[in-house]
Image (cartoon, rainbow, N blue to C red):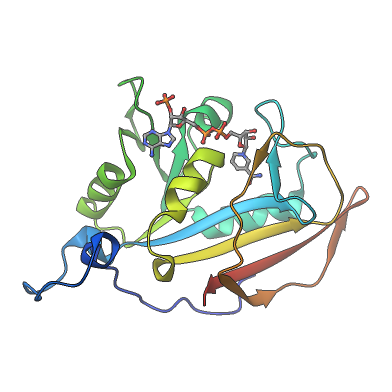
Length: 196
Ligand SMILES: NC(=O)c1ccc[n+]([C@@H]2O[C@H](COP(=O)([O-])OP(=O)(O)OC[C@H]3O[C@@H](n4cnc5c(N)ncnc54)[C@H](OP(=O)(O)O)[C@@H]3O)[C@@H](O)[C@H]2O)c1
């Protein structure tokens, strides 16, 4: 589905926290991590959820697209979303959660912060982390420097009432858009965005 290869972008924490300091050698594994932020959003309001679930019925093409992006890799997911969707097979599931310490198992780990998640993922040799929501996790991921992110959006043309939203992304430019799909009267396109 994706037509454009991702560039390899090295992120340094120094840029996030202030002016660059003299290099101390090769970047650490967590400094090599890139984010793919994956979300299905309404085009009119950036809505992503209502009452704890997605407000639209499952879309087969979207689920296939999501699997293609994430299988064999890592997903970072918020505790609330995880409680709905459970462990995604054939992926390392990293659950962000401060209130509990119960996420351990096959392909399942918990992390108390995005930084801790990065360390756990990097130590396992992954270089890409798929951020799959919900609202609070997207917001946290947007606080990471923009040049380390790619947005992979499913943009839904129909309107839905939502109580959870994707962050504004005016600072990103669209680098790919698919043809329009339609399932059960729901029209949607896949798009990919990078920081300007
Ligand atoms: N359309 C889409 O693509 C899409 C994708 C995913 C989800 N959604 C929707 O999004 C909604 C859920 O979003 P939400 O914001 O309510 O919940 P959420 O982001 O799924 O989970 C929130 C919880 O995650 C933990 N958390 C978040 N950021 C953290 C951080 N930086 N460090 C440590 N823990 C962190 C906290 O858990 P504790 O309270 O345990 O500390 C927080 O209460 C649902 O409606 C869902 O359907 C939509």
